[in-house]
Amino acid sequence: MHIYAKFLEKTVYLQLSGEIDEHSAVVTRREADRLVDEYATTCERAVVDLRNVTFMDSTGIGFLIGRYKKFQRFGVPVYIANPSPATDKILSMSGVYTLMQKI
Image (cartoon, rainbow, N blue to C red):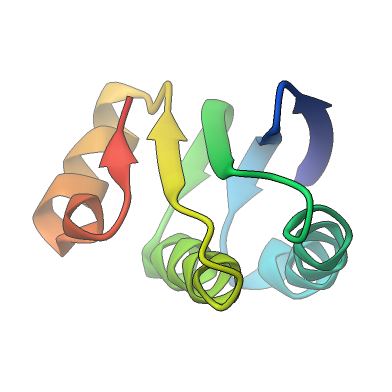
């Protein structure tokens, strides 16, 4: 899995691509945390773009909730964008959308 960041108009966009599973999450988690630390003090919101995520299991849910908690420490709301139908179903069933609104 890969993660890219873009900062535009006080919003940081974190675009994920590939599979979010047990094997990819460790390295991606470190990179995501680095990006949160870099942008959280200057952004007003964060958008996690899932359009290029091809697979996500419960590890992906934990990954998203962990980044949500890090952004919350800075008072930055987190939103989910462009989940695939399968990913959307997982996020709905898990209750993630009660923390992070889908836009």
